[in-house]
Image (cartoon, rainbow, N blue to C red; front, side, top):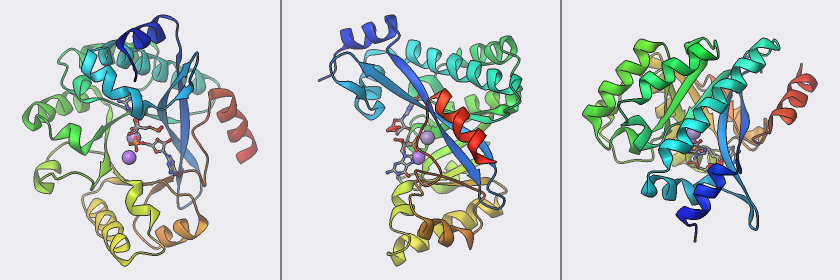
Length: 253
Ligand code: G
Ligand code: G
Ligand code: MN
Ligand code: NA
């Protein structure tokens, strides 16, 4: 079990770090953005997955402190890369408590100003289930995010039990098709139907569509025939630490 004291120590001793997974435009193979993913370098356990400790951060309220660090680090990194001539959209996952925090917007606007990052270069990823927890509140906060110029992505799309018409009232820029659907695309007729339907919906709503979890060329070839803008997955690259990302980008062109 992961304890609150472990997480406090992790924050104090800076045991958290971010890795960045490239997102590739399907059409021209350009890397246009990265998704920041949290990792914990635990003294005894080694690298711990956020799936195991984000819920504990949420339960203990430490998500505010951790989330603040994640946002600042991702913004700092994106600004640093931009100065080096590497302009990448930075996507950051937001936990429910962050989306619902009325002070987050002020902090975010301040951060991009301090680091001189164009707000449109930051994308905030919100899962379908997060968005639907307190939908009225989410709608108000997402509108504020848009006013400040940030991009908004709906993550893990299609996995929740939401009213789609409600979900699509949010001011979205990007729709991420969950990797569960992509995984079986070359075998299962049902998943093929779901990915086709979601990508068509997203396209006609004018959203950028990202398919996640592409591991195989056969999956990419299938997606090529659909209205999918971007792909993300181990086939392109695993989530990388900054030095690895720079090496990847140098070797890429
Ligand atoms: O990288 P992956 O195992 O790495 O992530 C597991 C889960 O943790 C995913 O659902 C992912 O969205 C979530 N996650 C990864 N990084 C972050 C983060 O910085 N903040 C939040 N809230 N969730 C994250
Ligand atoms: O929930 P979210 O989509 O934010 O989580 C992203 C998660 O997906 C992270 O855990 C990340 O490490 C993982 N991931 C990224 N690409 C792939 C992939 O190609 N295959 C699998 N199995 N997982 C992936
Ligand atoms: Mn995500
Ligand atoms: Na996802």
